[in-house]
Length: 307
Image 1 (cartoon, rainbow, N blue to C red):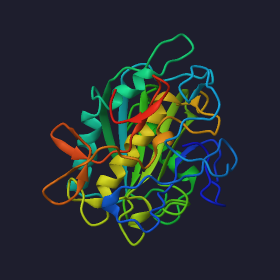
Image 2: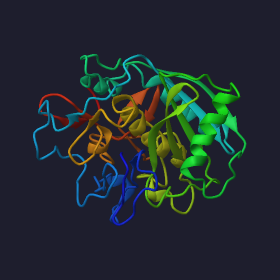
Image 3: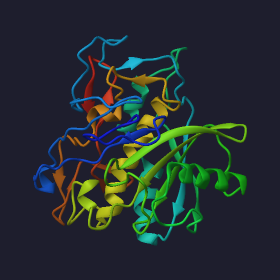
């Protein structure tokens, strides 16, 4: 989601795209109720409701506007920077998702978008590599600039390639605090010129801890047995969808500043119950996940888990 505020809170960096925390309104996590969010491109907007089409006619009539910027039209290469302390079990849940979302009916929703030449994103994502960062920017109250530094350091040290077709996820462990995380947002994506390359990157934190419910709809059990990692997967999916269709923050968004995944944020469609009592809505690569829906740019526009 673009530069965003939740109620009176504003994100400090207005060039980024942010997914605000869910507002549970006392509902049990298993109810998976849609929630309200507040979004804007550089300023606060009152009372937009995710999941509803725009009240104005978009250029293509599907509730979202094309604003002339690029989209990512080649295979998307997903990279991860594991910042902090991670267990093999947590990393496996996330890497399995990134390695299996390409070619899925879910990611195929992004093929309903296009650039100025009419070229569409491919339904293709590869998990292209990862590296670790042992608290190079500290563990307390990381700034947005610190996230940029983490990405730049990984590239300058050749820990990861400088890839214009990449989306770099800076994933912080649960002992790391980030300004705004769990109070104003759950994740964001943006871009920057790093070296000679336009680099797309995203921040998503592990919400495990006292404020877990700020960024997780299931807080006691989850499809893969780790409520923090499973919650992160849903936010990662949201940011991945948006990074591909609005990488430079000037392509696809509606008149309220909502990108495609923002329009469906914290809604999950039809779910099924796993044996451990958790809810899920899709199986990718043999793993179950509960993933936020995305906006289909066709047939007038609608939230869905597939196209």
